[in-house]
Image (tube, rainbow, N blue to C red; front, side, top):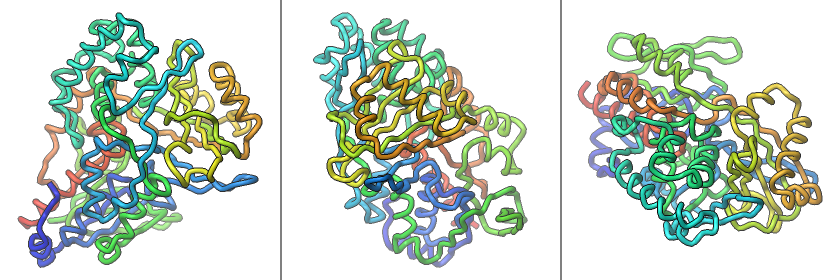
Length: 468
């Protein structure tokens, strides 16, 4: 979509417009990059004091070392076609780093490692019995059928397949073992809720977006991607970045739009030809005045799960090769996954050191939203000790730091029927409107899906503005 000639870019420069982008997560920064590349002037408003939103990285200093901790996603997939194309266009492919391609799943105290690249791993693993392996053929068939209907920027094409939860689909088409030790841990790891609380299509989205391709990460942490996009020559000139700037209203203003925002109690207004609103669905529902009542209700109803997780910096890395060890609900009711973030490549932790994050299901996080950090850290340490005692002992011996991250709107968890609701919502939107929406709620919570929705919004505005 975005491989355009230099002549086209020059032509757009002759008729450049002013565009506001609300939100500097990967959806917003991708939209801003594409709009700047098309020759338009961009003002980027970010509510927080840093760019990246849920795709950000920060440095944390422990007693003995410094660690880079990703706020949200920490590893990426070569299935992420739109992201890789964006990196190529921005000249940032040299920032891509290969990382572990293994995901492990715990069963009866034993860790079983699966390759994300080779589907044959399901046949060879000791995680599943032979009956489950035979039933897995249905999983691959259904994945192929659903995958034909999925697009990164809009998953509503799978609406007519959205008839049941991932739990019910697994029991109908697979068996209990595949539900308990593959489908449920994948759902909990991605969405932070069990399989009965997400649509079957959502479970297939995970597999479609992850399986069959090597993994990679970004040098310095995934949060460097939006930062480095803003630092490219395309973005440096003609882009105005406003941090600590909370947009409060996006509304029509003659042939364009008016965006009201505030900082430290002071309110300002921007007038522009168009606007991309790239914020979580409930925030978009609150600030975009052109939404119909039905559109607003849809956005307000989008469910995001909460995430309160603990990251431990360790002066010695644990002996684990996988990206993470998923913990099925049958093994532990609260702990979803232990992420071995030092296996993402150099830079997350010093050489020989470790960085491990313990991520929990939504109900655990919700119950601890207002508790003190030390209590949350103690609870997390207790949980991991119940199912991964060797890791818990390693944390006790080698702990350098412990950081609690709290995230209210962390991950979109779309229930059964949610893709049908999405289809009605997307069909109601005007692709020629000067206000375009972007965000993971058009697809599911991955950096690549959010990025693709930002690019789609930018392309629609480019077409609309070219006709003004």
